[in-house]
Length: 62
Ligand SMILES: [Zn+2]
Ligand SMILES: [Zn+2]
Figure 1 (tube, rainbow, N blue to C red):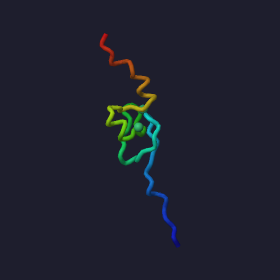
Figure 2 (figure 1 turned 135 degrees about the vertical axis):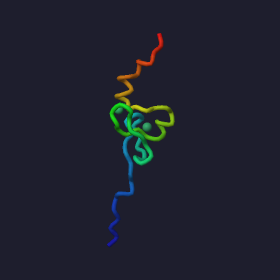
Figure 3 (figure 1 turned 120 degrees about the vertical axis):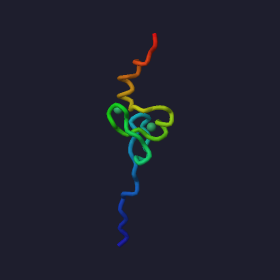
Figure 4 (figure 1 turned 90 degrees about the vertical axis):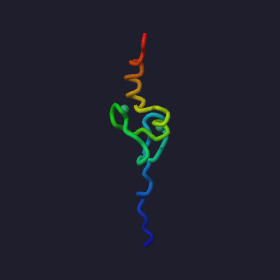
């Protein structure tokens, strides 16, 4: 009768740093909408690794 739903853990893998963080506290990637954790977004990371690699060198003012 002690059936507890395993739904309390709302964790997702951040696609930028690879850590498992709370999905409800993260943000979607600017490029593809995948999960970016709160820690990364506080560091100014708004894209996952793949998207960052695609746009990484576009903000160069040469
Ligand atoms: Zn992260
Ligand atoms: Zn992305």
